[in-house]
Image: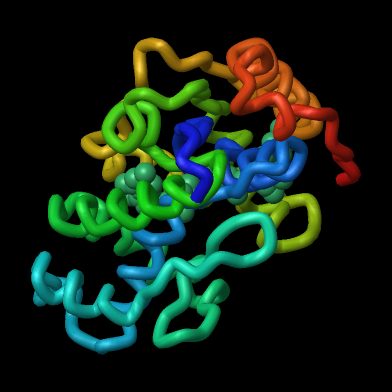
Length: 239
Ligand code: CDP
Ligand code: CDP
């Protein structure tokens, strides 16, 4: 560690608003590292699912105990939670985890566990961190705070297009919208928006435009600081 102050860019927003993929691209453009805080809630949930107990038996202690098998490991461009030393991406993104993760995320001790891992990751590099409460609870002094939002139906369409690799039907979008709205409700308590965040409604935006907008905002906010100078040189965006 050089001892200089690390830069944190916070990107918060609801499910499928584009946080993680956008954060990943912004991080790449700026040569920062990406930290996906939601992936840690998902990893803790997946680790508890592996133990096989009914969800009614999930206590804060039992989830924390299961989370001992999770490590946040540096990978190219960011960090990945491993469970028992192995990648568990499919498991973490599956329906069993998605339907239980909001319950786990309401457990204060689990939030403390996630927040300490995320803050530790940010000690070692400049980071773009995405989640629900990054600009308020985790990094209230973040150099730039962004909230990404989009209409529920559009978020449902994006999630399905990503999962199915095709254009979803109207019926599929309607069903997924119901799930997204339900998760918005279940996540309301832990979704705390910073009043000083720049809100970007991406409903009618191309992803490349929202990435460019955030990179521009980072340059406006941090461009003159010597800490950010090298990291803020133009990078290639090639999606
Ligand atoms: O990608 P998606 O928005 O579907 O979810 P995620 O970012 O992977 O987060 C999964 C879950 O973790 C959310 O539904 C929240 O319950 C929780 N979460 C949270 O409470 N606080 C955060 N900073 C990030 C995620
Ligand atoms: O992390 P979060 O759940 O908020 O969303 P994501 O997984 O990063 O994004 C969901 C999908 O929406 C990804 O396939 C993105 O490429 C896509 N998308 C977007 O993020 N922004 C747009 N303007 C259009 C599509």
